[in-house]
Amino acid sequence: MPSVFHIHYAATWALVGLIWTIQIIHYPLFGQVGREQFISYHQRHTRLITLVVGPLMLAELGTAVLLVLTGTRDPWFLASLPLLASIWISTWMVQIPLHNTLANGFDAKAHHRLVTSNWWRTAAWSARGVCIMMMA
Image (cartoon, rainbow, N blue to C red; front, side, top):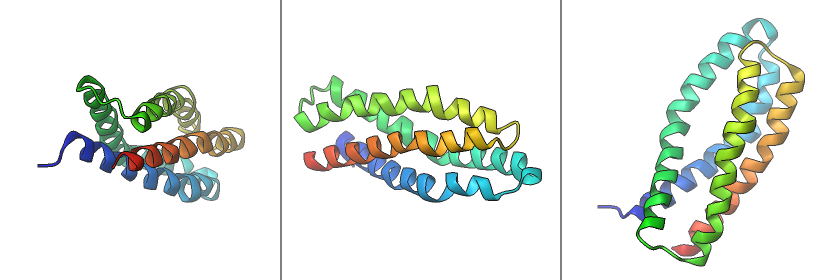
């Protein structure tokens, strides 16, 4: 049976790989879809990516809470917690509102902001991955 830490490690690294895929492939390609197809494309993308990202983010957050509650005080873990908080804040305060704008149709400004602002989450998740790896 995997430990809470192993589940946390796996969820974090799955999200590191996923955020790089989103940042390098998915988000930049939004601009290539075409205005006529964009709304249906974005709707499908959002629905499907949420099925992958949602459970992983909840697993990462839930196991982080469990690790805190069970007294994990590893400095690398503690250093990763502000990164985790910033990822969630950025997701809810920046990325989701931009996706809501794009859900109404392609908007070049919102698309550019989505790609550029998502670099923070990409860097934060990558740094979290390193922190969690240092605990192993």
